[in-house]
Length: 173
Image (tube, rainbow, N blue to C red):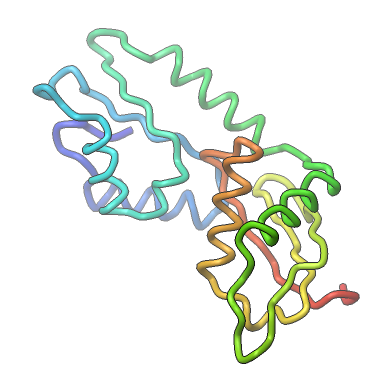
């Protein structure tokens, strides 16, 4: 929870960094929203994301304890996020999404080689870890893996849940 009138402080960033490194699900409550004078929610959220990029996948909820605004909703969102963090996604759904991603947005060629993901599966839940079996794991760009992560968040509703991907050559464990 952060104070809307102050914004993200060094201590808040340290806590968020710790939560992300530990692979924990998270929601961010922005309290004292009632004290803001004619705030633009999108601008405020954009400023937070600019200060700390990983916040882009964390759901933000505007609250006011004095006005009792969104207090129950915060508890519901925390519960839903915890349940989603324990999700086990079916391999055919994962592979269908990977196929769609590669068809609509293929990885750029690297030294005449076309990096390709053959199949993917979920390795574990809480935190969610997926294995991508591919032809050239070492040439996959981190930007492309982040794009895949965004697609997974959108498709499977994984906001507030850390996701990691392991790239492995096909046929090896």
